[in-house]
Image (cartoon, rainbow, N blue to C red; front, side, top):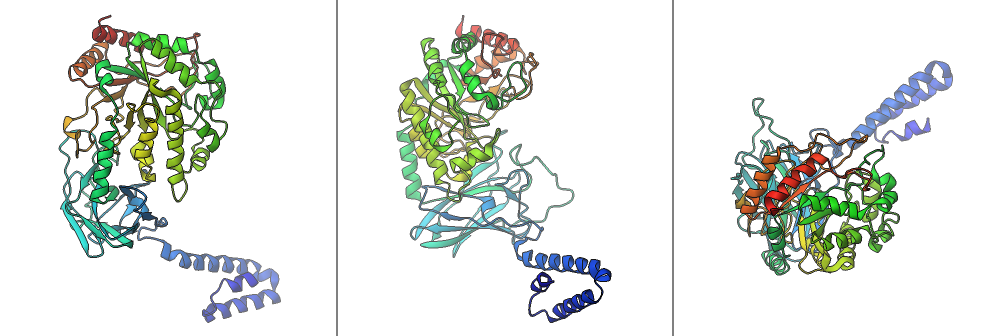
Length: 545
């Protein structure tokens, strides 16, 4: 009874008096009014609760995310993720891609970010978005306004979303500023409008915003100069022509078994036969191997004190990574690593919490990954040719504003010529500190459009490269194999041979992924024999032996 009275505002006298009458009737006839009282109480509480939450709802009835404040002093270029701003009007978050916002249907629909500028200054603004048809983009803060027609892609395939630098500079005062993006020409969608592909799977029909980037001209220039000064050496990849990619994932299944490798992680490392692995690699004629340090679950097959400090139990005493490097090196095959920062797959929640990815200030995440990379590079030195493929860099790591420069320096700590590849997934380039064009090409036989590569271009000043998979089943055996391989190659042997010959002539290094069993022993083939047979023909065509 007392609870019911306290849920009613004091100035609502009518409701208060009504409740007193209910209580009096209850005292006189408890049995009759018991149910009525319960129904009244639940209704009142629900109604009042709805009114109290009304201010937290946008026009489409979705609870707004807490607005993040961005400190521009922390980075040379700061990424303001679209969904981290205050959404107004029809703008809403994409249900599949939490960082994306869309539905700009009027000039009043907008996104507003709160930023802290260390001093009064002018900022260059980049916009990362997707939209097939041209519209007008406006960025404003205080009395400073930038306007430009949106860029229309001139390339045929990827990137499906791109970076456009706005003309002029945005003037920010010292301290707190509100930065707003809107589309002055925006109009409501028509029922006849095409839906188009979803964000990330093609160029969208509607305007989809991923982020805007802010950085002063001086800081951007300094960043670019430092990136150019520490470029890795990719000439050996061009000379080597092609390499092999294996996803030895936490989610990989054994040739016979029913559990992901994460659940028998220590055993999988202990049983790994390095010589058998190297023999299989040698058959393919690969000049290098991209080996999975981590994938879909942060489990590291070797010692790493930096990881032990973050989350004990995810490393091994056996230095499998070092053994692989040394065995391949004896055979003239170079090694690079693949890194996945543990954003999905096996128990990502526990790892992401431990590494600092969920912190309001994500500096701890950036520093932790940097520490892991540095220790790895110093341990293996010049024999480790770099981290050629850091997956999810744009989709998952970029929203956390990591120090790309710090990560690149860490990778090169033991080998100044080491190669860095920050994956742009299916979008634009991540950072000028990337040395390779790295994108998920699935099973496609093709090449990156040359107009995307170079200073100021979408992918930046990187070495053109191609990454793709051979098996129809994908990148890894994440389903029970039951002692059998799948269908094997997507394309014919001749198509692969022709493709590798064409890429050699174009001087574009190719890295092809072949599914490998989670248990690496001499008890069964590691790769689908059909895939091995194709690669043996490629080896003969390219290597002449």
